[in-house]
Length: 80
Image (cartoon, rainbow, N blue to C red):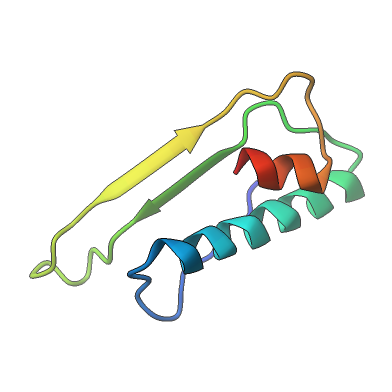
């Protein structure tokens, strides 16, 4: 299951990115609960705008292992 979004404007500071990540984790928890599922290895990724090659390019990702697997929104936000 995935919750994937792009930003409408460039994000240059950590605070708005962390806020968006929390919102995506909350949405993922809602989707998991609605389907009776749990998460074992949530991951997050991001990258810069590939359509602006004159800008510095970067991409990153992280994955965590949840023990036990869960769909609790607060726990998923904390893991994010």
